[in-house]
Length: 167
Image (cartoon, rainbow, N blue to C red; front, side, top):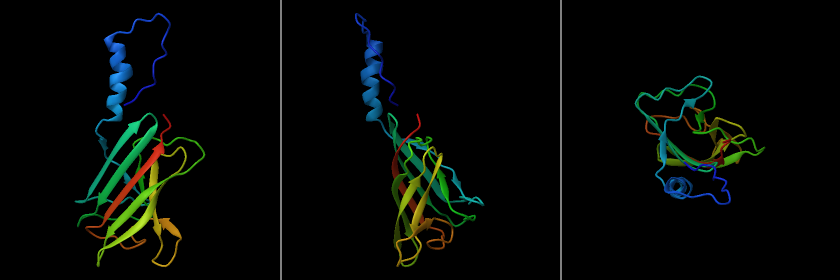
């Protein structure tokens, strides 16, 4: 992970430890593999993943976080009630702006894809997917177990977003 650069002093002797910390390690963090994390999936009444899968991964460079969350529901998944939220790997910055990412809901019969947005408020620890409420409107509502479609085994929710972290 990138760190705050050192302040150099006149006449300072630079050794291999300082060079590695200030140059090599900084570049390695930018080009590193993404880090896995397990996001929490919550609602008014929390869903239960059961035999579904929920994975998250992110890359943080400075205070910029790019993240991907993938949920695949299983035959024993229960959907709770209320609007869904997913935990972020880092708290978002309190910059007075809302961060918007992409959300895709796949599944159903026949196979369909709902295009939506992932919304993160300022100073937030969670974000949530929003989708059109039906096929003929541009209004969006938070994803729940019954909106925009009734979720069932095999549905997949993919969310990718970039935001500024608070630290």
